[in-house]
Image 1 (cartoon, rainbow, N blue to C red):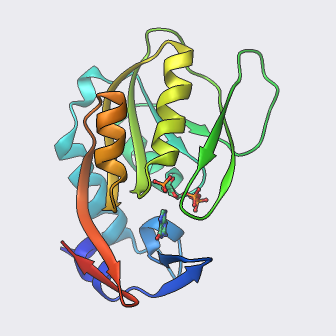
Image 2: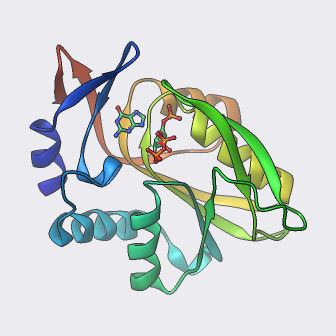
Length: 183
Ligand SMILES: O=P(O)(O)OC[C@H]1O[C@H](OP(=O)(O)OP(=O)(O)O)[C@H](O)[C@@H]1O
Ligand SMILES: Nc1nc2[nH]cnc2c(=O)[nH]1
């Protein structure tokens, strides 16, 4: 499959000590081909019962092409957790920490009782997923399902243990000696 094939040859750069892989789905560079985006969206659709989902939630930035594509296929609307504050009534700020960055994410547009699918491109340390789940909890939403395209490291296990939510992923990888290895 295209996702696995393209990951195997993708470049790695250092962000501090963190070996960061660069791929169209997780970075939007060097170029996003529609065949790859379509494959990923269809693989996600096969994993989720969209009949039971009111809204999708993702984090800025690289969840955006994923939820956009999924929304066009399923007619389910989406909310993007932004790194910028809007000061809208009811906006929920949460702290986000990844393997290489720290900041805030802001949730808008979710109402109590909303049945939510969380979508993201990567889960690594799990810091972003914890932030998203915390914000949704504070909004009173019901997290129905979680899908991340790429899994690396222990983040998935950590978040599952901490929150009790199961996380579905399409591909698991490790970065070793400057190379991506599909597990
Ligand atoms: O499991 P974690 O260690 O939290 O890493 C996963 C997060 O890292 C990336 O986002 P990033 O904050 O780099 O933003 P970007 O989408 O703008 O690249 C990715 O899109 C995930 O949201
Ligand atoms: N593109 C990309 N996104 C990430 N998010 C968390 N880790 C990574 C990584 O290594 N590469």
